[in-house]
Image (cartoon, rainbow, N blue to C red; front, top):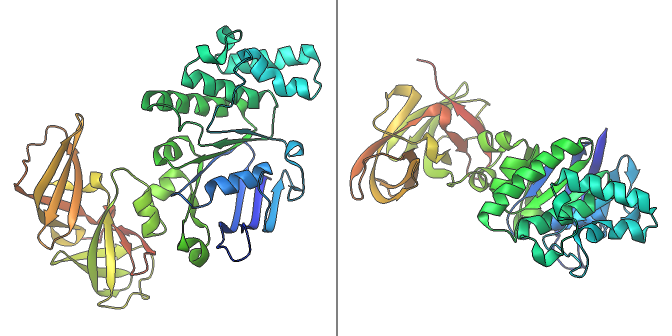
Length: 382
């Protein structure tokens, strides 16, 4: 049974304003770690706040553990929320900050002591319980905020960009701690909002990628739902392919020459590239514009074997970024398109040099003129 169910949930802040969230239908299982991600204005925080009861639902229905929640007060929903701001009481110790909500609800002192110390042990805060917030690092303060949520023993944890105020090293460390916390808590569902795709890819069991702007009204709010690897390797649209992955996926303009029995020939930078499609491509008319996308790590230096399995292109190195273990080559192709290649760090290419690069058909993605996927390409047999 799903822990959280969105049934055609929409949000409009006022008559005459565009939809902030449009017709979201989604199930989140008990114990699942689900991440809402997308560009600014896509409604990810609004969706989270509707779960918490901090925003009204304009249309549709929200259920938690099978119970309709549209009219239920936030305090009665069995959820706990961790905000971007730590919002700790500066005059209270770590212990008292974590215990405050329990004391307000009249929990007996012995139970308060037990719950706070159990949460502190999970979060490795036990040695810090008598400290004041001013004596803590940013990461420690965020753990106190998470501990304040844990002591409530909610069915659902909600995280609204909790790492945004931390530096890069602390973000990485706290990300690991949140993942460990999810494993230890087991049955509690976690819903996490972020604009950072690295957080989404590393934390999520399920990613919900949301559209922004005009796409919300024309396509609905949800661009794709799936595991991190589903979105990375099988993007449903060009929007998904471009949003997920860093460096960004390469998108090359092409034109469909023809197709038969699921096979297609695409002209790419003046060359014909034979591809096999996993689905019927009859909706693509010969001569129609398409986009061929390939991730930087799949652009290989050197000429390929040729034939139906791929193509070799030539590009002039316009810029080189050395990252240590790898390097990024920025190439200008003969037709004017730009291509990024992630190569080994000791690659010897120089700025201004023309180098051959090969693309293998199994690594390519094909999208129609509207940006919809024609499924991931696979190599034609010899």
